[in-house]
Amino acid sequence: MGSRYDANPFEPEEEVNPFSDPLVRGQMPGQSNFSGGAFYTTHPGSVPSAGGSRLSPLPPEPADFSYDRGATVDIPLGTAKDFKKKERELEAKEAELKRREQELKRREEAAARAGIVLEEKNWPPFFPIIHHDITREIPTHLQRLQYTAFATWLGIILCLAWNFVAVTIAWIRGYGVKIWFLAIIYALAGCPGAYVLWYRPLYRAMRTESAIKFGRFFLFYLLHIGFCVFAAVAPPVVFKGKSLALHIDITGVSCQR
Image 1 (cartoon, one colour):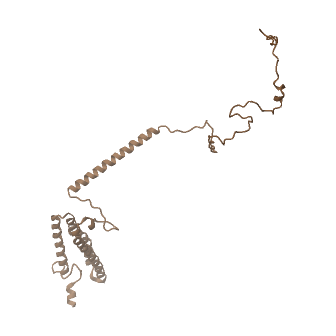
Image 2 (image 1 turned 45 degrees about the vertical axis):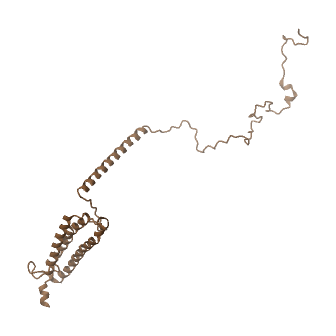
Image 3 (image 1 turned 90 degrees about the vertical axis):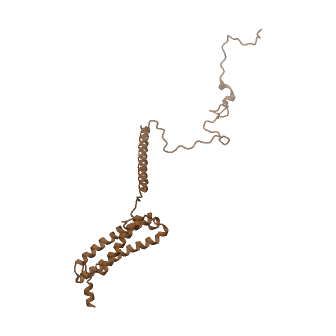
């Protein structure tokens, strides 16, 4: 049973002005009683302190950072195809190099089995024309003998050079041009001839200890010694009374004495 103090449900509700309350009117403009939780602030311009926060501040953006989403980026097309093509080319070159290396190795082995040694020119150092390496190629117990033979060959070169100088002076003094041409022929033929005929066979014989090469060396070395003796004695056979070694008239010198 309702009380007499109950409101009439059919009467219009009385409108209540929220600003009529003096407490509401006493607040500052822009303030609100709504707390808004832990991250709400009543002052929009203020920022809560980050002293107790675990979040680190974001790094500053670079000065030239652009937000232009309409800029185009050139992405090269066919990169994978080009890479595969270059890879195939490199593989082909590598296979070719391996094939050449195997071929060269096979030839070196075949030459070694046949007794052929690939000689690299290394002497004289300023203008290499022959292969010469006694220290590495000649056995230790034969090196002294080989150095003696090498000194003999160098002595022949020195003697033929001095002979050319002496004959040139003799030609200037009136001995004639014939002996000068003979000195040139002797020098041009004697130096390489001695090397090819007896020094190189001796060098190879010392390196391989071959009896056949030793025999060739002794044969041509004896012939060379015999020629030097014949040129020094100058018997009256070819150049009567003239020495092939000195190219002077021995009989004339003897008569003057």
